[in-house]
Image: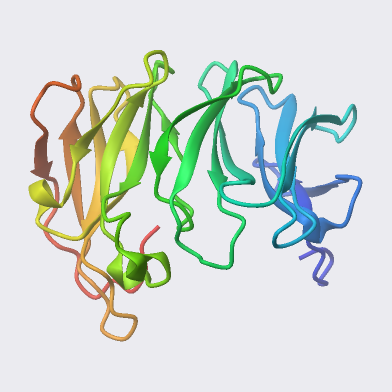
Length: 250
């Protein structure tokens, strides 16, 4: 909201004063997909699209909207929508998803990384797509936690979120090797999501739950998973009892 009227677009809010500032992206705000500021606050990476089936463009600019640089374009089709950008802790790399440019809402996505200038782009692994689960950098910037869909072969889950099955996984950005650290086999429930690293990078806290009934709610529960190496058996433990009557998580 801007002075009581709806004014969509890219906005920055001063955390101390609450003062908002609109940042001009040089095109209609409806074209904006996603944006993320660098850790030092000097740059913003963002993506735009002209509409369904039109692919996406990714851009980098100064935080005041100046010096806009076009980084790359993804033509329309499978995994051509760039978004869910997350900068590494030191600001030298950016992780992001390639989402499918499709009316089918919950198709898998590709997890990619690039440097802070938009080059050295490379694909790491496949992740859950369509649910808004952004990748999460480890504190040392060497690994990324993500939500992995574990029933990719089930077409029902492509359109029905109640059919989703997912696990918490980690990928090493140097080797590209990924592994599951928590799944339904450990938690006993269908959905494992919302990973968050501990400050020392030794474990991940996450939420596990069965699909939530939008009338009756659900019973999500916080868990913790130790993160060691790909060869180690998953070590998972519950942190809280089930939280009852929760209608939404995020």
